[in-house]
Amino acid sequence: MFQKIKKLFEPADMTVGSPWKSIAMFSVPMIIGNVAQQLYSTVDSIVVGKYVGDNALAAVGSAAPILNMLYVLFIGISAGVGIMVAQYFGAKSKEDLSETIGNCITVTAICSLFLAVVSPFIIRPALEMLNTPESIIDWCDSYLLISMVGALGMAFYNILSGVLRGMGDSFSALLYLLVATVLNIVLDIVFVAGFGLEVPGVALATVIAQAVSALLCLRKLTKMGDVFELNLERLKPKERYVKQIVSLGLPSGITQAIFSSAMIIVQSLTNSFGEMFIAANVIVMRVDGFAMMPNFSFGTAMTTYAGQNIGAGKIDRVTKGAKQGTLMAVGCSATITAIILLFGKYLMGIFTDTAELVEMSRYLMGILAVGYIAMAVTQSLSGVMRGAGDTVTPMWISLFTTVLVRVPIAYGISFLTRTPELPFGRFECIQISLLCSWCIGAILTAIFYSKGKWKNKAIRIHK
Image 1: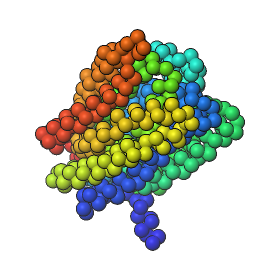
Image 2 (image 1 turned 120 degrees about the vertical axis):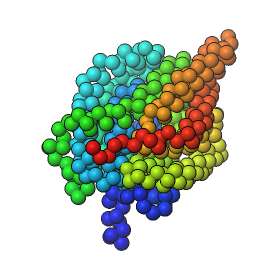
Image 3 (image 1 turned 60 degrees about the vertical axis):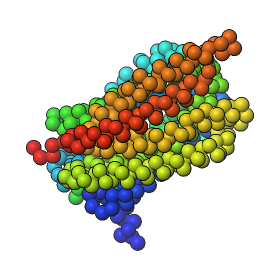
Image 4 (image 1 turned 90 degrees about the horizontal axis):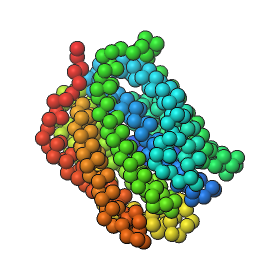
């Protein structure tokens, strides 16, 4: 029994055994972990909604697009490092693996310090540019400021847990995240309900909890000397590895930047519908976060699976696993869609006692529900392409569906449905535009995956 438990905390070789079993064993802890990570923002929303009010709930939600935009640096680093770790681990290249991990730690520290210095000067102007209502702008400002000054913990947890997952160890990352999630919940209640810190309290709780999870990941990595070396020499930036991190991670960072930019542009439209719709949209996005978790989890699993197998030169095994992984992801998303449609009212009631807000949120969530099946296809097949080293194709698909589909449809519906009673048009435009972008993205991803050009994108393991 002890040996079985111990094995859960060890790197997993996904180049052997049944593909679907390898993907499933990796994905289950990922799904649980992603659900736990989503609890960070969800608990924030529940606590401020219940203890402070609907305006506080709207403030936390309005801060999200800017927060996501400021985090793009770390998303890019994490994506590049994850691909490199998976391929080098699959190729059993200890030297390259050691240099990659050491360089990623240094690059992450530099980016974190940069954001901590710059963010205080850009947060308030950004909120004003988005026409954030006066009733919530101060709360948004304080929430973002605390989050960005304390971004070091968040950055290191996401990147170091990505390193663990790249080596097939999704269980350790899950355990550390569960510890941090429980801590976050406790601190949320203490800071908001106990000390009356309101919105700044939930930001402070999240920063502290993420720092704890980052330290736990770092401690785990320092004990894996049989797999790679981590010392001061490895922390010195080396041009080859930094360039690889940037070249592989930049498209993913750009993709997230595009997505976040679209969210910011759409947030301006969202803000025009007033505090009630803003709060409803926050609730929808919180439930959406949970509904999307299996898709993101399978996407990450497919990236690791494809990376390890391509590093080992097993391309046929990659395509076989891609089919099996995508089918599992679609099955999970279909189940989630059914749950949302059947129990939406009860899910929304967790966040607020305001009946009108519950009904509006349920209605908006119903528009999005079927789109999660489309996203299962997008995330799984994009994960395969990224694992192979093709991070550019998913970037272009995201660029097209976000800039040329989502934003124009949102503003187009808003403009065409304007009336004297609805000066800004129908508020459903936000969710309809998102659903359209998801469905078109799934079609394009399937087409480009089937063309197979991603098979030639593996990084050169041996120099």
